[in-house]
Image: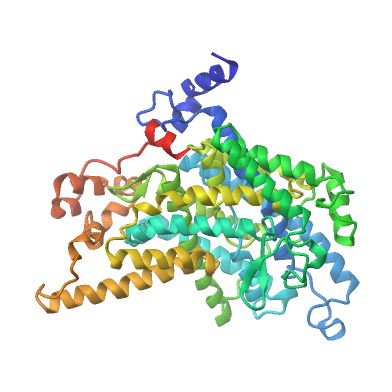
Length: 572
């Protein structure tokens, strides 16, 4: 037995091992295949895959102007010619880098310690762009001020918390048909790969096109226009080819089951990209490249938050504020719910019988409270990150993975110059690889019945093409309701005489949703607080008695799920 095995066994037998249910811990329900050393590696992999959010989120939110302002009659609507405003923006960006690291650190540690899930939280991409460019507007040119928008985000988090506390968010998650949950995971896989193929957070193989929307790119940065469209020299960019090499190396290492394959691939490409006098450098000899390199050379630095902390303005009289709040609410609930269930499916700890996963109630509570706390730091809403799949692919099975990711965000507070300098073509191959892994569950969709298969397919294609998990789910749910409601209505009106030929092949969605009643979604601790026994859908499956399911006499809680060794081997 090597020292790593000795360490794994020691931690597993400790209080820490029993809390996180590591394999060999003696916990009532262990997480099969979970080992301390694997969790550490998985957490580091997740962090590296999502480290781009440190600089990207700060850059996007800085475009809102934050708390900076100027004489707009003198310097124009965007204050572009005001030197003091430009200097203020530079300080704002450093504030937001610190804020992003701090709230991501807190949220990840809470998720790992309380929910015991390998799902990382950070300010969500898409939501931050909506916050900066639509709600507040570029340099504050929108109809809602930065401070007012932060108040809307805080209220959204509080509403989320209440919904999660009483079980409404869990109820909503159960309402999503099984085929659409499976399709969401596949759609996120394509979405991840699509991001990994682009230049903003990927290898730059796919770029924009005025004629076909997207086309084969791979051109050097100097041959792209303002819209990131290649004007020529396709497939001649060194970074693209380096990213492709990284993808091939990760794939080869995974084929041989080399531990840390994804992390090794990311680190190797990043190190190759750091020297300046190369065609694949992340720091070209341009003003922006020089600024980035000067920041990179600092290695260790810390910037305290000066202008974004607790900057709420509680004026809710504007209709635009309420529009923003409602938009944040429904997009975030669909995004986060879809991502969490997809990661649970990918990790193998989704209970197919109950369509829930262990720790879901606490995960939703952590997510919602993190949103409210994040607004106090000056950030847009947080959400579960699909890059968590990179850590799960490395073997992450418990909250230790997420805690390690949180610790890395804490370290990034002081080493931000390093972690903010991972080039997109280093992390892009990891996203593409994880995307391919998330496609494996697509075979479980009920393709035999078009009422299940078509909405699932619409969900899969709309998530990447609509560039939003939330909008993809909306499209899938809407089509599912229309098609199946029409069929059900015709079936009832005709007394069962008019029905699709394979009507019996449909998923029994209505039967599943009505099992257990609403009480089966209320967190067990709340039921006990009021002197009631928790209700479980699992009990309904065993009894097939809906009256019993709706009663308060049900004694067992939602059963926890573990992944068998055979299933773990098949997946990884």
